[in-house]
Length: 209
Image (cartoon, rainbow, N blue to C red; front, side, top):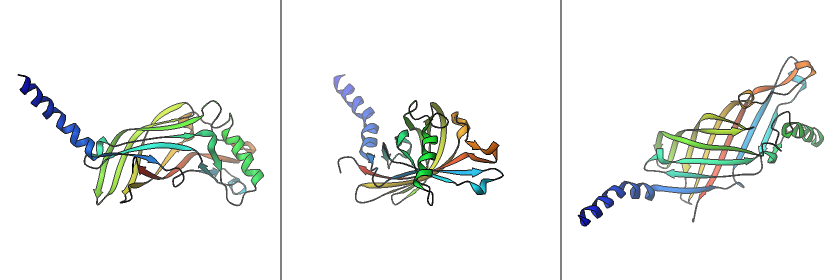
């Protein structure tokens, strides 16, 4: 009976062991990665306003990639809200600072009350994979401005021989879905569009490599 129990434990444990051998943990390299938000203007006098480009300066996260069983993969990251920086080309430093102050203030992100933006995946589906290149559909929860919403992102992932991976993705969000009212001036003749576009270029290195 003891031998049978040992054999059963070994057999039951086999799938777990096989899966863990193919799963690797990667930490995001923030120096080589980029998270940006594109904010467009709208309204009758939108030509007199400027679109905004916002870059995240401080963020961290981890990717768990299981090359044999993609659905066991996962990704999570956290952005420090106060690190979001307006990078508008052609704008004066003064104007950029004014836009950034408004963005981080109570009217928009309210960074002092909501200091972090978080994403955690709940499901990963393989669209295609070949020679270390993966097209993935990642579902998860985005927590922004104190509101948690499900999002689905198509992600292009490529692994490299130097124990790194690169992931690129793009997703559109509505500010109003997260309890944020888009800024408008001049009685609405110039306003920020509700829809934002987020782009990600993530470089991560395998832990221990």
